Length: 559
Image (cartoon, rainbow, N blue to C red; front, side, top):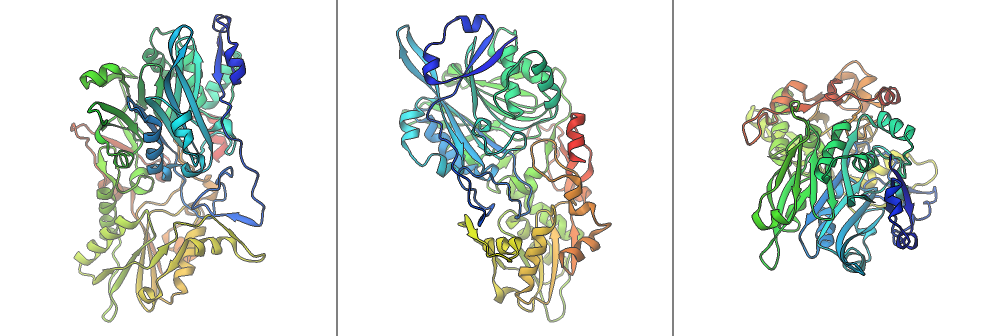
């Protein structure tokens, strides 16, 4: 049985071989990890558009589902950490609480060349965490790296020990991990490991994978990873770094996305990358090769560099049908990304068209239909809605009626002010000339609690439109997610407090509200991959049909 202990840089120098003989794993805790900043005074209220370094983004007044995390891996590039840094920028929307990069390099020792790991991570946005660029060039040296943007779904936010990537040194060498998703048998595994003496350094589910790898008796690291993943259950897209390879894995149902790409170096050789979304390839000029398939472990090593061959291993001998997270298409992924082998923009336009087909809005003799989007996630869906509503014979014009500020950090809230209303006003403003006296259709991607929607509709009403109709490109959210999205409990979801759309619309303050049906939603997304194989989708947040079972304790916490 292996235990994990933390060691400082001084203690690492004194490590002896008896550590491994006694079954102890040395987890390096680099001294240059920055400490969290002091708390923000209560009169300075944080807006969730951007987080403040050191302050977890937990004030959910802008009421949207929170994304899970973004992961990145880079192999065989002399500036691997710099490439990872820019890729993190592209994936900032997937997590704004914290960021980190782990790099691998060769170092000279009395016994010759040896691979070493270096890490830097902290609370805050990527720009804040790596504001000193010397971190990238002088600390995070090496030709390989993994990186992570965090939005916590398990494990306390704000604690630096919970920030990824994680890494350890064990009998097979160094091993680093970045995880996107959520394990559903966390409590069972943790109880089992703790009962056998395992000591945990974090409160996250991701650390479990480190322990399972370290405990495995398999002969190779790939087989140890497979052994660990056979015991894990739930959603995971992983970027892992060893002394000799970059390894990526995706759970058997492929719930979260993960893609492989390559980047030509100045000397003509190829570097390889794995990322959560392909927009992270675009920012560094890399090209998409393929997705990491559901139920697959891929290994990229020196042989890959020489031959172009990416090694592949299955996790399960017989995998269940894929069930991709459909909310990646609805909201999470950037529209300029490709996820699950499909362009997000194309799917969102289809969602908008399907919504207009199901729930059109008719023009009046003296009044066209003015369709506006809620920036930014509903932008392309709104284009689809407007074009389809026009094709159905309704005189329709797409307009920009809401302007979003992308530069809001914190704002002072006067005593007695409505905090939610002020936050919405700080984030959005209306183009009054577009809305006044118009029959307005607002297209948005989802409603969670309904509180922000209500404040936003109130803001639009101040511009004096004739009517306001709300159209949502997703069904009503009725259940929390178990696989890496941070939805509230069932008791907090507005759809569980009203009997139908009319009641919800009345509570929000619109003339009419229509959601996209589950049936039409599923008709709007691809159902075959590029190989022609059938794929399905997880719709648990709308239907309560969870494709992967979860711990009873997790169920109790969400009721």
